[in-house]
Image (tube, rainbow, N blue to C red; front, side, top):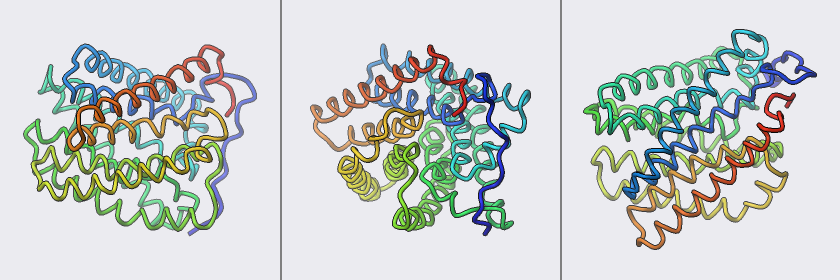
Length: 313
């Protein structure tokens, strides 16, 4: 494989849509994951506004990315070719799945159609990235946690496939996501043994929590065996404890949009914990997730009001 990162279009020296950041696609993931956690606790007055906000954020952020791609195709293509950022492209289809989840209790027919479209898009993104590697156009620099989003994100879809009458599809996507996770995890760890992640990317280490936590929820939704759920939840709990031990170096470089990478894994782990933990722990985790994700959202809004989201990054 070619070790050199592809050349990128030079960043704009002025603010503008050309600088609209790709990691913002993770915003609907954090909001949607938190909304689903509140929905699990049947606090509809909190969960449904959060799910509505998830859909709105997905539409606005993806719409601005589409406008950016139309007006500045070179900048959008540079993001897609960048080995460190290309994985965030998978967040677009994950956000679509969560938008389908927002619709599920209210308009199941529309939710089913949107979910199927999201699955197709997600598979297309994952196939495109793997085809890049097989053509010899990949780079070892791609081995960073955001790569789990397009390649392992399939494990989220079964959570919504089951209630929409698509269990067979759900099991296939679960198997695909889990097997790709088992293939990627050793490579990611080997990459971390060689060199630490760049400071702005270190918050994305939290993405390592997502496959096991979401996989546990998928097993539950599909009616799988309890031991399989517990095995995956045990891995998630181990990873959560590990991340707590490295929290300071992971977040020590100060706030960055990469913090959104930790929001969805935290929310998914919180939801999985609700199945096995006493109520006081479940509520405590939900409170923690709400504070963390709310704080990241407020910090992002402050950047937006300062115009920082449209500056070169």
